[in-house]
Image 1 (cartoon, rainbow, N blue to C red):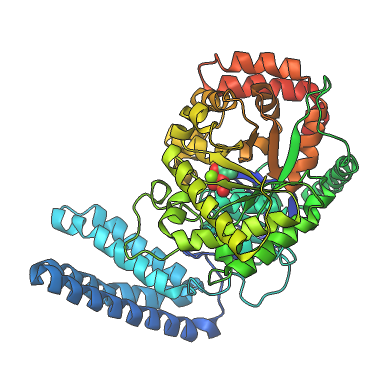
Image 2 (cartoon, protein in one colour):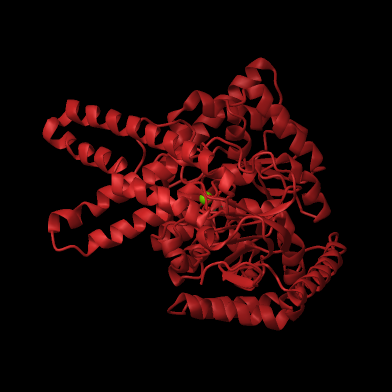
Length: 584
Ligand code: PEP
Ligand code: MG
């Protein structure tokens, strides 16, 4: 059922960042295969046509360009396909139908054009002539080009000039879009695509912004300007909420805020189990503005500083001096608590480090993480020197992302040694005892943990990527999102094998912030958890209500389990029994 004026309507998706947001709905259709529907006034018809005409002209230009490129590369025969595209672009039947439908429907022209062409394609799919049937794909191609050319540019600011606080509904958001969202203006967001461990979802949790992803038909089913409630606990977007729904959510919001305040008040209590097992509880950080939140939440330092958001977020790469000052600022604000800097992890779904001439087909398996740094040595060394210099001002650790085996470890350690020598020569100080670690997020590294442990001081398990690579399930592809299960026995055995190597081992992936899974990680023997600042008070409370002995025997059973559901149930059952209050 589509949106109906005035009626409460609930759309269900996957909750990825807790909280409740209430406000006016803004719809952002960038990247969406179907345009959102907006009502227009009769006086808008002319300007809508102008918008459509200029999209047709841009599309024509693109198609002619493509035609001559293909003609040049492969010959006239292959290029003839674009003649068919060009003919369809100006097809009289379609344009006449559009002229009639626009004043009749009084909706934005992209939505009407979409509906008219969809109807046409539906007819074509059922004709007897197989040649005509095969043209449907070409028509769909032209349709998408025209729609794309009617959308605002990729680089236009997401919310334009509007300053009214809103709930944002979008087809998809890139991590860079999310990083730019101003929490004063965007109270929460909901997307049609997306998954729980995409960097977009991770950033929402860092910003403390309620978020829901994977809502089917979101853009087409929602209406900009209506009132909306976003329920980041249960994965709901409620359009046109009824009075009693609003009342319920206002009360729930007040209750949750009250409960969270009570948790924050325990910020100075240690994360220790009822039988004395101490777990270091640190924060994951992406942005400088989070420093105050990590203090408020009582973090024992920073267990993962994702430097890529700072390095790639400011247009051009900052030089060594700028990096040093930035890192030093964080180290000094942590008052003697350790800050672990992870070196640049670009690629995958994050910002690319360089725009490649040819797009990578499988970016998560491609030029990502340490592979990028090791092939751009001078830039990498600038970052290493900046981190080393920051280590003179407090307690610092460094770790490397996406390590797959010993060769990379030896290479980065040799570069680190070169950097130390260069700093000594210049008389610049650094901490000789700065800890050096690696992320364990590629299965081959987990398998080789015993060997790698001889060369580094600590491990930090990136369960987001370890799950992705172990089960071969793309962490941002919503079609396989339900398969993304960090409790897969294959994943937990790798975690257990890594911990058995016997050096300090943290978990800094999203699994560590899931209060259902904290008993499992504690029972498997992790010595540290690093989680988003907003989750930290919950995880501390959870640890303080667990018995290490109980966690250990549950984890031993889990390691024998056959499937991910059983593992999750074991851990979740212990979690509910140990701290039922957190699930209310
Ligand atoms: C991970 O992979 O679990 C991790 C913490 O790193 P990122 O999410 O930045 O890839
Ligand atoms: Mg990772």
